[in-house]
Length: 134
Image (tube, rainbow, N blue to C red; front, side, top):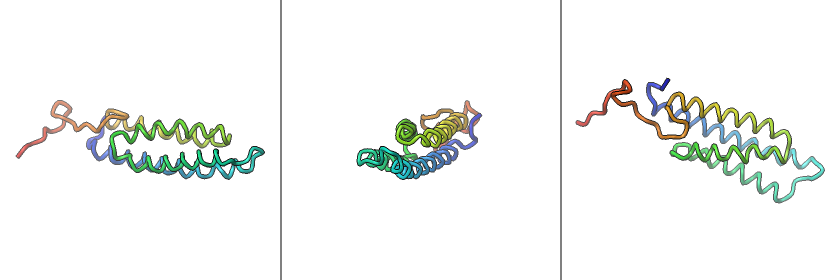
């Protein structure tokens, strides 16, 4: 199944990906509070890593319009999941976000035909109309 208007579907899914990445960045900003209450405490290295990850997630939301935006967002899912090593509650939070991200990629593949590739306009063989040159 493909979307009747793949360009519009691509834009909508890019917006959803951007929103997910912003929410992930906000969730990572809550981690230092949980770590500070543990015996190990919150050190400068941990705080820096978490702030950099949150910043990268938020900045990655801005490149979702670009072709490699989904690849960057997908790559950032790995360090997001690794925050579970700092705070065990993040295994569940990050795991939920990763599952949402995978679902978004699956929906994109169904609607556009490719999880990471560019949006392909339907041609005459696909039931679409051929572009006209006037």
